[in-house]
Image (spheres, each protein chain N blue to C red):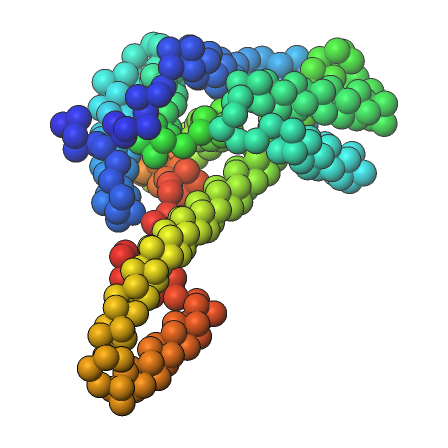
Length: 127
Length: 228
């Protein structure tokens, strides 16, 4: 498993691996949302930590400098929070019977978009 | 993960954990404290943001401030050198711009009944800080992508120069060896067959003329293409 997430010289291979990392984190976000959304503490804190962890893993994977870590993490968390709550409320207003699944769908989509945007910023192009 | 990541130090991990904590705290503060301050100041976050953005000279001043801040940082601290110092300076700069803009905003704004000046200044500061950090971070990310592209091009140029140097070195070794063999053959031909020796000298001259001509052409490109 450790070897699988090693960066190679091929840009397409790295891109696929980075997308798998993003997908795994998106699944983790969905599970967290499903388990913690309806409890008193809420899922916001844990989702923020997961988003930061995803950005950290992607920067480490591409061995990029951490200069833009704070910037990407801040933008990612605030954009995630804003789009997540707005889209979640909108979906709930359309399909109230779906309950927490609305939030799970929105969390998954938001995480995928944020992860993809992070890959675009920090990913290294092939020579 | 990758091989370069072995250089990742414990100190760096602590610094990143600190930055991550900063992001979590900022996110929690914005989510939980902002409604309370909005109530205290008598207006919501988006109303305060709209009021701030309607002050065009101040908005322009903030934009110039953010651009100047990132420009100074990029000039003095290259990416990948001291990220913690750079991040802290960026954060301090944005806080300074937010404080100045909150004070300037209050100097030009009218007092709203039922709210305290402190609450309004604080709300304007928070709104200005969020706005400026987003602008500064976006400029920084744009600047970072440009730096990344430039670094990749520099690396490519360095590789090409290395390949060119190796090619010249090999050619330098090959030429005396070729000349030595050719002179030995010529020496043999002078005794055995003078006509053939004369033809040989002419052909040798042609070979050297050809070599001299291709030296002037860019021969490294096909060599690199065949390697990749």
